[in-house]
Image (tube, rainbow, N blue to C red; front, side, top):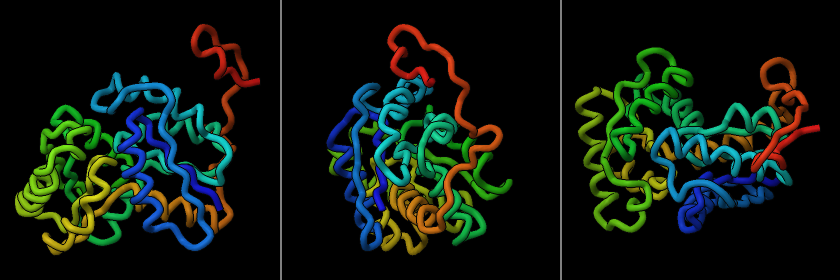
Length: 238
């Protein structure tokens, strides 16, 4: 079984972090391959970034049995499901589903305040009404999560505040760059802290083991063939 973990931004060091998280939970015989997008933004912190990350995601949906989309905004997830040859799971999707299995309510701890609305939108899609008790931003830019030695401490402190403020039972880490924080944060807080990269890897692994993939009927059927022009010419489907 081969699972491709896609980092939709172009920062190689983040890909290495994501790959380590995915490999740590992969089962025997599972090959995890993390890839860095060849086009797009260095980090994804806006709707503009998300939109321009999608072509890079679509370009690497091949040569694997299943795929993890390792950005908490789950950019291009629906488009990826239309064209991938195996199941595709986003890390926000996986983390929020997992959190609902271990508590009545969860809080999201994310990066920039401007991304809070997107997290709320995704919670409305993935979780039952009221399951997401709050979304809290540490206002640490994505690429500083790795370089700032105080980042983990600040994220844990914000998670503690979120638990008390929201009366929630679990924490969802709202960025792939926080993947390495989950175990330590859970030990310090005494509650489940969900890393979406690990959760999505295991969910994709389970879907492949079950022998199921995205339905080709209806909305996720392959997109109709048509010409694409300009820089998107290579994305045309016949």
